[in-house]
Length: 423
Image (cartoon, rainbow, N blue to C red; front, top):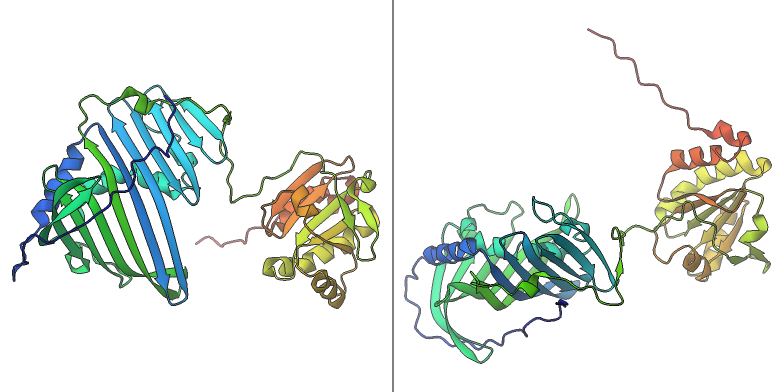
C-alpha cells in the first residue's frame, strides 16, 4: 500500500468546560502521570498521530511553526515514522525485511535491507528535518513523562470535544518547581496535559516556557515559547496492526538514490567539466570560460559584505603575484547587489586581477546554493580539480601545485613539531 504523510486525521477541535470547582489544596497528580507513562511504555504495537504548533516570540521576533507527526511500531522491526514540516517532509517505513526513507519534496527515496539491530537509515535525513527525530521519539517521550517530575498539580476535570465525541479528561499541570532537575539557564516553564480518563492517554498538552536563545556564548536572548500538541489518533496495543501500515510503494515520479545530499553543503563539482558561462567585464567586454581552455583558471566567488571573503583577499593577492607570470588565470566573481561596491573595494586595495559582477548567471551555472568564499580551480583541459567553500588555504595551494611542475613550489611546507626536552 502506498503511504502518504498527508493521510493524517484532522486536528481535533477542543471545547472545554469546568466540571468541578478547584479545591483549596489540589491533590498531587503525579500518580496520574505515572499511570500514563506506564500505559505508553507497555504498548508494544502502537499508532500515534499528532500535530504540534509552536510559537516563539520576544519584542523583536515572532515566528510560528506547525509539524505533523505519524508514528507506528510493532514487533519484528516493523515501523512507520513520518514528519511534515517547513523544513521538508519525510517518511520512514520498514516491513521487517526492508527499510525505506522517502523525501517527499525531492521525490527521492533510499532503501536498504533491515538491520537486526533495528532502524539504520533514519539518521540519514534527520539533520534536514528535526521532525523525523521527534516522530521516532513520540512514544518514548510520553512513556518517560513521569520520570521528569517529582510532583504535579491536578486541576478540575474537563470535557474535551474531539471529532464529535465528548472525552472526559483529567487535567494535570506541572511547572518549573515540579522538575526533578532544575534548568541551569534560569528558564521557567508551565505545561498542562489533558488525559483521557478512560484510556489514560494524552489528548492534548500545552507547554509555555520563558527561556533563552544562546546565539553567542556570553549572551542570552530571552524568548517566550508556546507549544500546543494535539493527538488526533492514539491506538496502543493494537491486536492486529494493519500490515499495509508497514509497507512502502514508491510513487511513480520517485527516484531511487544511494544517499540524500546535505542541503546545507553545496554540491562540489570536482571532477566535472566547467559549465558553459559567459562573463561580462567592467568595460563591457564579454568573456567565455571556454576561451581560457589550455590555461589553468582559478575562480573565486566573493562579496564585500562577506567578512571571510575580505579576510581571504590578501592571501589570494599573494597567490596571484606568485603565479601570474606562470600562466595561472585568476578571476573573481562578486555577488554584491551593486557592482560598483566590488569595483571600489578592489581599486582601493590595489587588487589588479579582473573581477566580474554576477547578475545571477554565474551562481546558476555553479549551483544556486553555496557559501562564500568559494574557490574553484580548473585545469588546462577544462576539468574542475578543486571546489571548496571557506578558508582552506593549504588545500588550495596543494591543488594548484599539482597543476604543473612550475607550481610545485606552492606545496605547503609542514611545520616541524617543537622539541620537548625529556625529563
